[in-house]
Length: 307
Image (tube, rainbow, N blue to C red; front, side, top):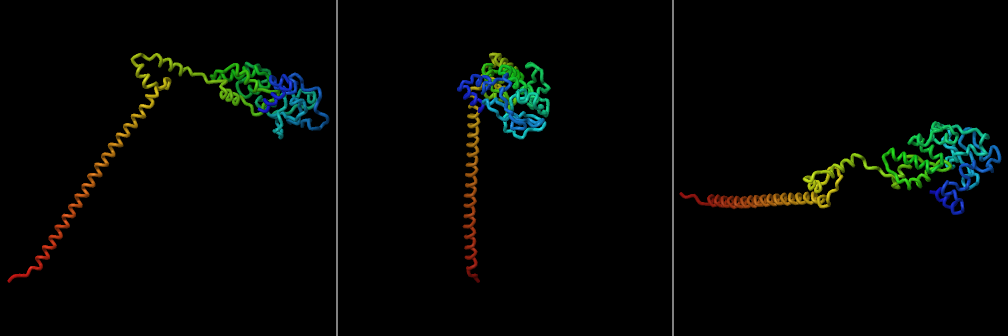
């Protein structure tokens, strides 16, 4: 985002290449930097340490000398907040045949260092042979060409069975390269971004197309049933009425079951209450009988004996 803003500002000040070639100082790829060097003393702030990735200096950003480093060296450069140097930094007048090249950690293009020294294992291959992986992406990005990057990204999308919007892809490809490597840029991130922006979309699979065709050719006798129930594979959407009907029926059945259960519980409660009343009445009668018997016994005891 900051790079895009800088290019927009530079273009507004008359730098015509800023918005088309990422060139903020009208230097271009073939300038071999400026004829005015950055190294005024050795050692100095622009003199690199032997075998390491820095310190280098470039006029690529605004035409003034700025520190940068070469990534992916065997001895990693500690000041990683510096920007990556332009790809052609080692061929600039300050460094060509003056200092030894940095020692790269690997010959893999994805590690970036070999793109500066020319020692990548992919050196010399063309666009058609560039592998559709992070090495191929890094190599094509180092060519600093939107058309080549668009072709490479289209190949990568095709390999994933995606279709692409060619016109929008051309504009997107411009954001995927620069005069120096873009920090954190990867092929996977580029493809994810293409999907997010709908520059690339997944193509419908052959099996889905076949299923749709076969469902269209269903005999007329089954068409009514199919249109009502829908297809099991989801190729024909159901009517909203038939989507809601099962839920309605389930709700009605559940309501009926609740009513039946409630009725049975009420009947059972009534029976239990009746039984309790009957038991209570029976207990009252038993108590009355017992009281009568007790009175009779008292009466019998109190009668005087005759004779």
